[in-house]
Length: 285
Image (cartoon, rainbow, N blue to C red; front, side, top):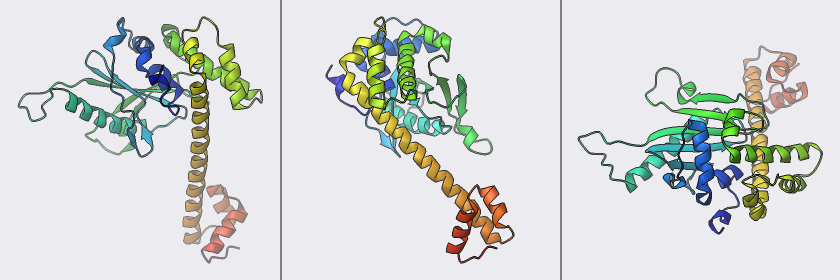
């Protein structure tokens, strides 16, 4: 199990479905999504760029099967900006494809490339649609020339039941995440919640032995992911606060708004508005 244990900072989703030792689970999920019946796990050729970190973004899982480039990302927080991430990942993966194949970019004939398929697996606590399509074009005005489409699947336990029934490892992963959250809601700390969920994992689960054999890594991944979520939430709150302050500053500069109106529109307290105005050398009645 040496390779499976090398990176404790991977997400659990990647640890299960992006692990070369468990290609059969990746293939099971691929078949469930696409309605295919591939039987040989070795049809999957992983090409994940494990150390591709750019602007704090890291590629989760990517592989080629039947000349199709599959890019899979897991998100525990809803993010409408995934098409930009996939655009960056896709560029790097196609660079890798060119470097490792006989693709000739200066050829006078059209050179075939694997068809790209972008999937985002969401299992955050905020209720989201079972399926959604995010488009790069949503982020800009007019008719642009670069098109990226990301298919988002909600893989929380109880969602997308048909998909879950077609892929046992996915249903079991979703059950485990749900069990940890339920124990946390019972006021248990995260460490104890993970242990209890692992101990309660049904014997018939195909991923159980893998999880228990790698218990320390699994716990570390849960803890790391939880800490990442807390940091991201703090950053979102800070960003929202800065946006409210920018709005208040603009209104103070205009000089046509009362403290109460600025407070109501910016959602800052009247005291905060007055302090902000004071720093600008403006006195508000």
